[in-house]
Length: 99
View 1 (tube, rainbow, N blue to C red):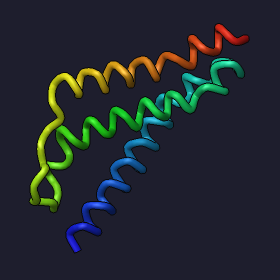
View 2: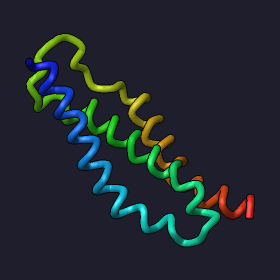
View 3: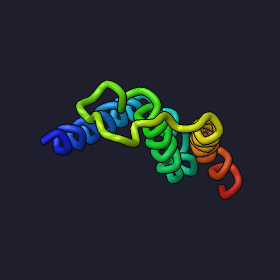
């Protein structure tokens, strides 16, 4: 039963927070058609940030008490945040290069 609650919690966190972030940030990508066609990269950036938040913060406040509840290493966290930043700005770069 705990496994189902944890999975439901993960789906809700990613669905609600991801949707809220996309509502806030998604309007930035509607600047022009070229940027809008690469907006899926911005959505990927949101998912990567949510993954980092879940692994470093949210997983410690849930029902799961098993093994493997470790934070991500600092280097992995920083590289994922950097990757998310690159994914977030890449629609603007790709939109200006290919149009």
